[in-house]
Image 1: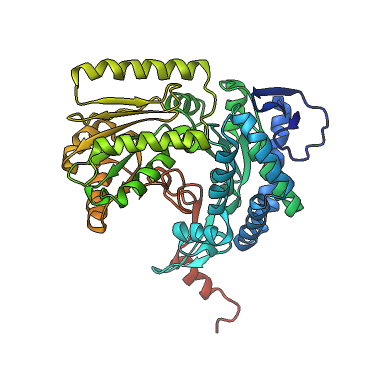
Image 2: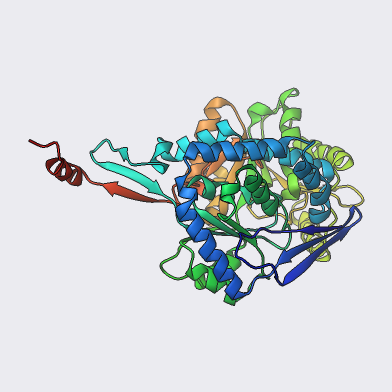
Length: 483
């Protein structure tokens, strides 16, 4: 099955060199054919997107753009629509994830971009979203307007399907022309979404480009970055550092690198009735996209003193992961992933000899692994792919010294705690470097308007233009109606 990937504005050419990215597993085979632009063609794309951004996109009101995105999302949520059916059919082949994981994950994710959620998103960052349309009065005097870049470039990663929607929709809401570089691991969804937007509003046809080149192509990257106003990059820290080295000082770079997340379970949630819910929600956070997101948990710290002990929590979690394996099987691993997991597991099994209270739980096929540890709160990432640790603790302050060395890498903590504990723990976790506190079971589903890695999704993209009160006062003296 061959699928055309990416999206190009009308640059007056029909002949493009292409590359075919092949995805093959037991679910089938997909060949994604995507254009590989020359620097001359890339120059035409940049010019076209910049012109369309300035002359067309910025003439839309933010309300009109919200309605366009809402219509696109509504069609993607409709399981009878051709785009949704294509996504449900092809993404499991391209990514290897279970069909039901894709279906449920897409629905949960797409709902965060409905109209009411986008309105919250805009209000969260701007307070008054009309700042994006025209000058608005400021409390201190004068007026201000928010202006998005003409060319916003995205370097996307492919660890989670449809992830590019966050930055692509953000760019559209601030009225920027968007050029996105798709990852080789999942090159399809962002192009589908742009095609859908253009079907709904043809005037947007030249405001986007979704392209590809092999990672590390310095010539194309440098060429594009030199003509971009803002670049948003996703990926590992080394790859982001490499991108930054090719960025001119005049280009604003917003990197989103590797992060680590974990869970914290209070004894207040560990009675006979509540414990199963906490375990079930924790297991959901582990299986969704096999921990490939920055917000996926590597460790669950479980407090002692509840009716269900941390060791029992670990065993219940292992049982729940086995149940989910039957319903939502883990994707097939590459040789490198299998080797990494085997090495990690071997290290943990050897460590048990020096920690007799520890335990390694898994099924015969090693489809999942739960490591339980007592008297050890050391914070370290797992090997991913449904591999997680459960660590027993008495007081939350005991955990904090182990988080401190990883401050720059911390992102999400999934919490099951009483109302009083929630705010006390959030205060401590925030000081330790955590930027998002959420409920167990929602770690992989950020709310609309969340502060990604503690930053603003929209405000970081725009520039503010101010009319100071002195200019307004002088203009009044020069008005034709002045006596």
